[in-house]
Length: 419
Ligand SMILES: *Cc1c(COP(=O)(O)O)cnc(C)c1O
Image (tube, rainbow, N blue to C red; front, side, top):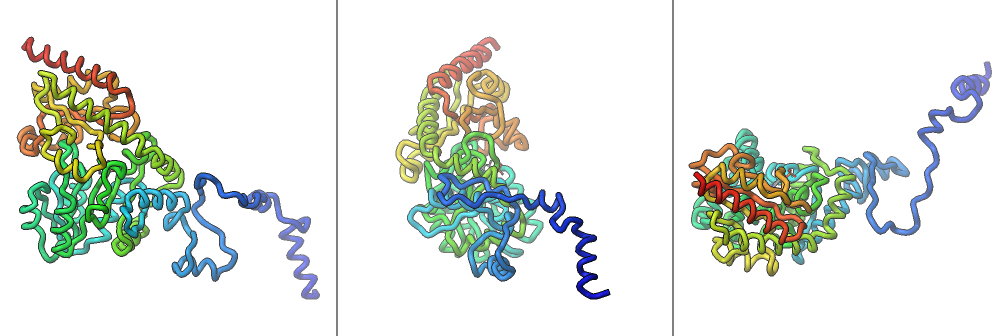
């Protein structure tokens, strides 16, 4: 048979009527051209991969010699838009880069694994988020990273703990649940003198209260799940820092895989727009709430940096935006665990739930939830009463939250008196 005839026969076998089959057509249905007008919002690019005009273009983008998108674990336009927006909020006039993550822990683990290696040393505050603690104390130690936990407010102790192998000094702007304030400029000096990076988890503050990069930190990390998202409907994280350190964080993120999904990125990006408004309101309500509740006779102590008696008050006034001291208030009623549980259950405007930073006020008894691994003695040593109750103040009216808390405290107090 003539060669051309053979070819035609093969074509007829594979394409009965000379045009693509229905499934080929189905997966190649036409789409409209991209709009000429720029969308007001970065759309949700729900795609895992991107098409190139040529193999050369594909190779150039993968090699990083030409900017572009190839695969969404590496970069996705919606997730990038969120990372850029968060970086702009934290920048403090410095040249910075942001990376977005699937969770706060995704951000923290990528930062710590990116900046350390076997033989490195980390100095960390002993009052940090539980999973950050176990990451440092467990996984990182297993990989040969030495860790010292210190009282981060004791600057002499921090200075004594750093050594030539120290790669990271790690703290939180405001720590849970005591609302301890870190002296970021002093910690940055100690870290930099030792050749280490200062990494700050600023989840409890948010960039609408304090921007650690302005105070000398090299990297700021957030659980964007909290104030940045702000509506308790999306889990994510972000890290922002100087380009040199962030290159190592980015490479850890791409290798480890905790990339932020585009749907979540869209929600978190939207959250940033109202972050200053929400924080201004939530911080003001928290300060009013703290002062009102502190005056109740059934209360042993209230932890909020707006109160002049709080150990971090002066530092917060210096480092934080005017009038904003965070929106978490920890109230310790007299009467131990039982009184604490009764208070948490007694406040009707607040919901008993994990997490913080959303529009709803959430409440939780510290000793049986976030700090459940600690004995009463260990809690007391950490400055946490066994009855401590954490309030994450939301957007409800202050008078409702205060009236409710005072009524619940009246009942706690009455219970005490009856005993
Ligand atoms: C919630 C939280 C984290 C962890 O964030 P996820 O988004 O839950 O992974 C880390 N640090 C602090 C201070 C937090 O409150």
